[in-house]
Amino acid sequence: MAVLAALDKANAFFISRLQTQTALYALEGASDKIELAQVLPQQTATVYEHDYAMGLDCRLAVRLIAQRVPEKVAVERRRKALAKGRKKGRTPSARHLALLDWTIFVTNVPAVRLTALQVMAFYRLRWQIELVFKLWKSCAKLDHVGTWRTERVLCILYAKLIGLVIFHWLVAPERLVNDRELSYPKAFRRWQAVIPQLITALMKSPRALATVCYTLAADFRRYALKNRRRKSPSTYQIVLALEATLPLA
Image 1 (cartoon, one colour):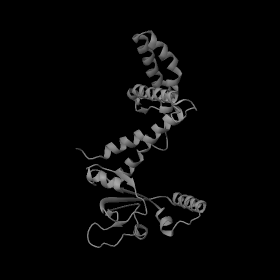
Image 2 (spheres, one colour; image 1 turned 180 degrees about the vertical axis):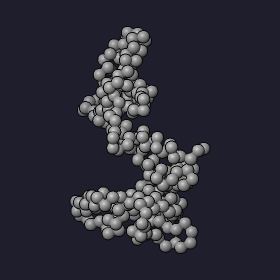
Image 3 (spheres, rainbow, N blue to C red; image 1 turned 45 degrees about the horizontal axis):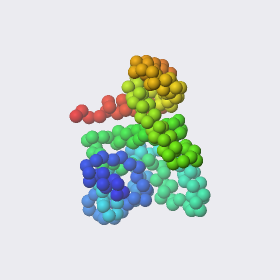
Image 4 (spheres, rainbow, N blue to C red; image 1 turned 90 degrees about the horizontal axis):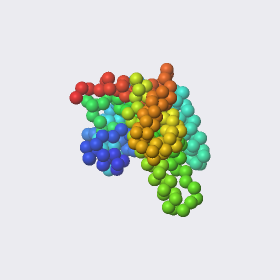
């Protein structure tokens, strides 16, 4: 809550999932707490949007956007909540279980800048950051170190970080090829395969190094593209769809 208030005070925008225990109030008038578990079941539309004041103390003005999930999804959410509760020796409240019928967001982005559907789509894009971290951990083994001296561990860590910087610098121009996206895991495997050649070329001459880099870029375009999706849209397709609906500046 304090982080969101600080962002708003700095004139920065945020989109966040609502922590269901967070207090909500009307922007003006009555000071009674709004109970979403009573408000949402009365809605007939799939998407509910309303302005509220959030937080017991700071009363931060936010847009609340709630999207009703399919019944199958809601049932699975409740099953997991009950299982987690049993594991921790407690029972989820009826209020918490009822709110699992909805995916609820709060944001300070004005409606004139992003519609409710655009807010929900933008929130999905955060996963791209997680994918980069996953690449560093799973492919580059950034979190794997041996029981060595501190100096050796630091040398290995810095070498991996330098390698990742070079890798991202090389793949940046190839992220989109003829409307197809680059797969970072596939590209990383190609990168790992040519590291011995890069080291040899680096010691040989700038021209040799350039030749290896050009060949690697061609390999990215040929072997490291994402498979075409027929069902769920990719991040790039989501962004293109959003771009078509954004208001002109």
